[in-house]
Length: 337
Image 1: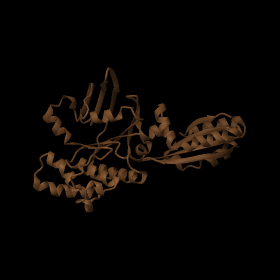
Image 2: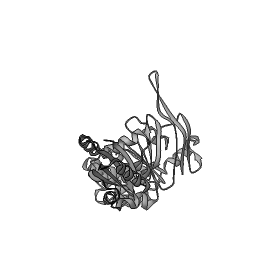
Image 3: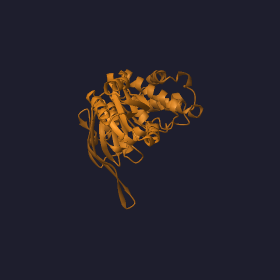
């Protein structure tokens, strides 16, 4: 549905050229939730804003449903933008308008008939669960409620694409979860293609089908969320995942003093429910201590992580590691002892 081809974006800052996005290419399928993650300055905001030409690319093509949107004239771009909703980090609500008025504003700009606006606003309020807040002003709303208004406004013109620019980064964890659940429900109900940017791996884990990892303006890794969590290739992805499992590194350092081999085991699908530890002990006559373990609940699959300390004859430990790998279980030696 969306194909980004060799897109770059440069800014002129005084006498210096800043390359915000460098030759990025990827494809986004219809009806998927596509995440773009990276640290501050990675170029993700510039990239997502080029998908509706809030920012103009310096070079490259953006193909949507077979058409290069970079070539759209003003009228065609205006029609295209009505089918691309956008949610911003800081809500961008009009303080002088009620909730109802803020949502209606998008419809007024799109020249909807006045007689149809009220019914459409009521429909949108129901979708985001704010029927009782229609006459409230933004200052009377919580952060989560403000974001729900922003989501309703983004959906006003029945878009097929929804862009989310750090939509949850200003919210607390509980509110973030409720907004992500709402977006998933909306995507499923309306069949939207959602492209979201974030610096939070928790958001990617909760929401996305596919993820692009960006660093210094470049795409350094693209894959399914399962692939990235199971076996990240870029250092950026590894670091972002490590943030979720920050306690693992501390526990490994504490355990190293005993001088035994320490391995990290990553498993998914049916292997999540297998009795891995008891099988290793029985098959290879080794002792195993579980240092730490977690299970990440991704959108469509569970991925488990175990940090294990192995004790026993070296050849038996090596045989145990080989057996794990033969079971399609990823093993990484964290400390050789």
